[in-house]
Structure formats: structure tokens, C-alpha cells
Length: 120
Image (cartoon, rainbow, N blue to C red; front, side, top):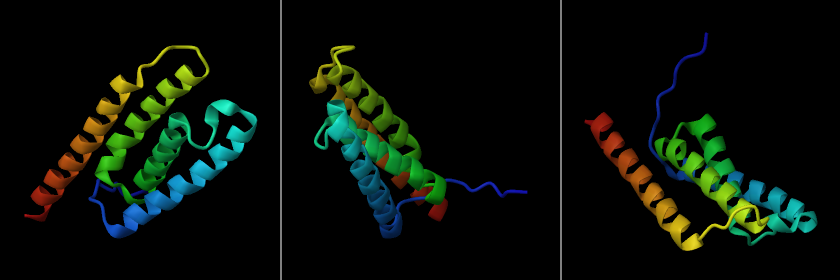
């Protein structure tokens, strides 16, 4: 039987794990971008997909609370930018980025408050 593991807070090790997973994902996506221009290395979609993959990997390995929130947020933003890049939908990036930044801030704030409560 598997034991249920609750969400935890960030540590330098979890941040390094997220960074490494994101960097590897970015490299793979950038290689795909050599053949499919919509995923070129500096595309917002590529970077956000890589960050989402890093969050998913970090969530499954370390259960960091903010990654459970930011992973889907990054994925949604990446899909929006990809749809814009392939001309399926027009997305105003000035409307997407504030939601991404606000979501990341809220995720870290929730993690900080959750970690404070669980420590006391």
C-alpha cells in the first residue's frame, strides 16, 4: 500500500531539482523547435512548457505546494502562447503575463502561509 504524502514547502534542493528538470525539458523542446518553429528556444510557449514540466516533476518527487498550483498555470499559459504562435487564436501577451505573475505570487504566498501553520 502506498502512503499519502502531503504537500511541503520549498527548499534549496527542491528548487535545484525544479531548475534541472526545467532545463532538461527546455533543451528537448528547443531541439523540437529546430524542426517546428513554434517551439523555438526563446519562445514564451517553450519556456512556459519547460517550467510546467519542471513543476510537474517537482510535484511528483517533492510535493512542493506551489508547484501543484504553478504547474497547471504555466501549462495553460504555454498552450495560449502556442495557439497564438501557430495562428489558431490571437492572444494578447500583456493580458497573460500579469495572470502568470499573480498566480506564481499567490502560490508562493500560500506555500509560505501553509508552511508557517504546519511548523507551529
